[in-house]
Image (cartoon, rainbow, N blue to C red; front, side, top):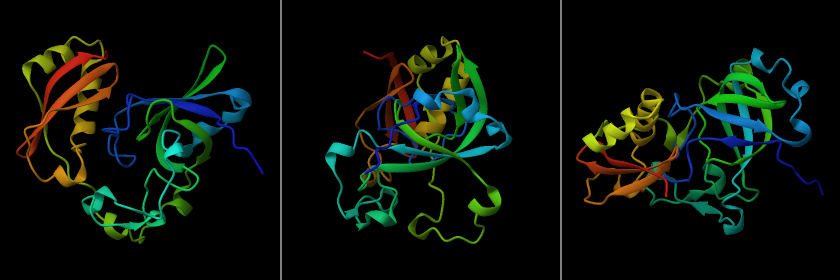
Length: 232
């Protein structure tokens, strides 16, 4: 029996599972950091890594392990109603709770003797344990004529608008332009349950992003950010 130890943890704006992009590359301008730990936290372990533009991250769905798994799941892309086999999905509830994402490599930095890998296109909750990093190799990993079954097309997005109170909070942030862009890319995917995404409702939803509670409503074909408040 081999025990897998994490080689790092991810630092992202996503403080909870709600509103995380359902796949990498759906919020491309959101920057995250991978902090290496233990024996992997060694400058030699990332030597020549910056030759590659993209990486594969292997990680643990650590928040789901105790919940176990089932042989079939309901993918959001099928409206959350139809069941498919767990291995025909990217469900977070899996036999070994292992996930994999292709992400963009922004830079590799050494901060106070610690290795920090800056990444884009990450779809992971803050604190997710990373168990391996592998270079993305275009000639072998990108397959031009691959079929994607029920996920053939990229998901549709909705315009995101900010009400005055929310916009006021945004504009007072030192990195307001970046945060506004990030919120637009994240919320444009309509994080509500799949069965609600084709309809308006009168419910307010709140998601934890950055150091904020961000509340929004789905009105007709747009997402309206109603309030932004500091995390409690």
